[in-house]
Image (cartoon, rainbow, N blue to C red; front, side, top):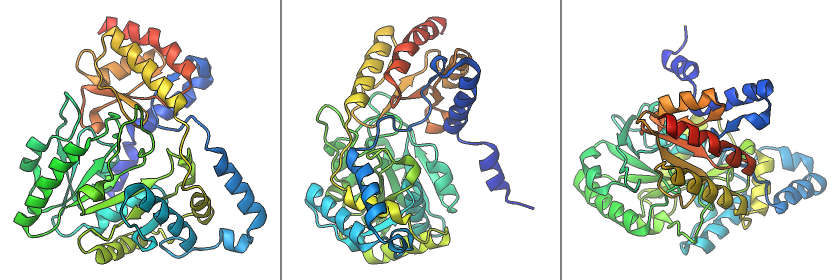
Length: 393
């Protein structure tokens, strides 16, 4: 006997991972230079030099028992202090080490917060297009997942339509900016309108509605765009962060939850997050990675290669007639599928060894996602295939 719900999650795997692994297999057949893989958001620029230097210095200089031993469940004090100081400097708000709980990346951070808020009949809202794993994260916590349809003109938060999706059971909304998959950054006025609505509905329902701000792309921003610090706009915000993208460390699995003092019942909520992490077996995040990010909190990615890819792919596709909102952040394009079916377009592209992710699981089955964190040669080589496809559809 085994859990049928867990079986279904394992048997029907992430569409992103399926395409990525297909691409690896196909590269062995036709050669990697003949597979144009835009499936997965795996950083394609190296970590800043300071990251490698931090690893080296720690391994040489630190006591191995300290370096590789358990830390407190919430994280080592030195790393939490460094991250708190960086957030305080950048946000203008006071963030204390006691507001931070280190996790094995952003996914366990999100699950811990959702589980912490998972009271009976709880609902968590997400805005399409959304990262597909949000649904299993929410539903695995026994919480109802509520999807708000996308504003396909701008992919901004559809504040006018949102109220119809809020109920007395709404515990939280997941906000992801810069957004995966659209690359859109929600501007301050859009977030301010969201804040005003949630404050009003929290008063009406008699309990706080939290924002869970999923921020792994916070530093991946172009053209001088601003990523507002959400707790400064809406106090009942909990931040989930990962260094996977900003420091090109996706395989090291290091991130945190930040429950700022301004959030309602912040101390109790922090304890609930810690308890939720405990139930999922996250005793402490990887110790070495905590020390490394503690030394590298001021490091920022060199975005020149990502920006070049973003511009060249966006301009190349729109010149052919594809429709796409110009991304301001992250490393994705979300493109309207010619013919209306992203799955049909993806299947046909796959026959030509061009791998694009259909938007069905993102809540937009008429769009497909392209990851632009690829070699520039991949973009150049793919454009003739995209031209063939739009002609066919």
